[in-house]
Image 1 (tube, rainbow, N blue to C red):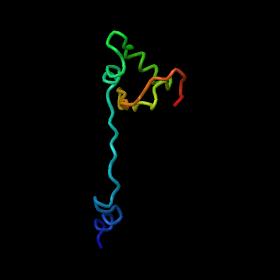
Image 2: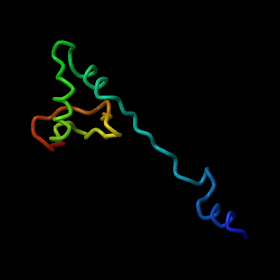
Image 3: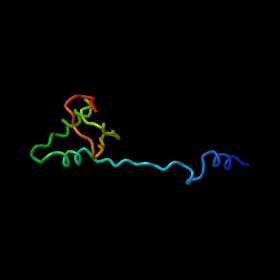
Image 4: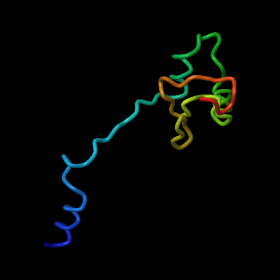
Length: 82
């Protein structure tokens, strides 16, 4: 058995690996548009502050300089409450 065969047998075939579960995420602007009327929408900086204060649950994921929200994410008055 060479090193490539050994490594492959340890990792398994693609059908043996667990399926990748990808969560749908939307951008900050899309989340605001989906949750607020255009004339009542908070500013992007306000939403970023809410994220830092853990007022959005479930917490958005930060990738680079952008936040990505679960479509089910909601603002809560109490920081860190679920």
